[in-house]
Length: 184
Image (cartoon, rainbow, N blue to C red; front, side, top):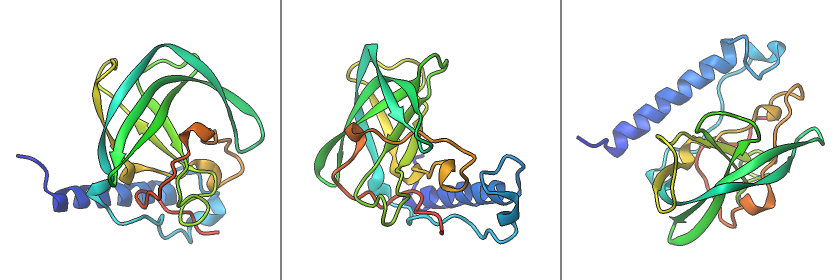
């Protein structure tokens, strides 16, 4: 039986409530300890199934290195491992997925900016992490759920250094899904 939109929204809300609990209580929370008592949860866009899309993969067998600037004016080297093409609200878009140079595993890091960046969402962009089953090949289809887009930890504390989305991952469309900007 497939998941209904209401079931999906309930599951997403449960996931968000758990993340809020971790931010408020966990030792490894990105919130400074003095801010945790007053924390009453992250701000999110409402769950919207229209922002769950399927992307067509172009796998890069010989990944090109790219230096991503960080929130603390350093650079960190990543490898562009895939290009993801998808339709969103009737228009075609593309994002690149990266893996940190030397990192093991199959997780794909997708930092991005969109027309909500700096207004409704964090000015440094947002992140998604994709966890495909096995290796990806050209033409494979992979789900992208912008409802899971999250704010990097550097938005909550200067103790964190976060890669900033490169210009090739700036979408020319608003994506009102996932986490909103944290309160200032």
